[in-house]
Image (tube, rainbow, N blue to C red):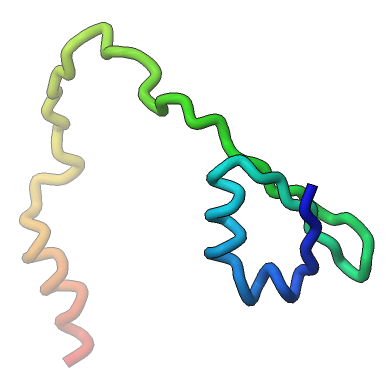
Length: 80
């Protein structure tokens, strides 16, 4: 397993992550003490399952019947 210091990892993060993507495991060291391990993720599909039911849109009832633009104008009228 490859080891790398935090400072070197910060300087070469993209290159080190590419190594991990190809299957390498990297042990991250802080003052020669292990603090983390970079390992490849499971490359399985993120898609879990098909939807069981089609999406159904339900319109919401408005909270107020006032025109929102009118309400904003009223709130801002005292600023001018």
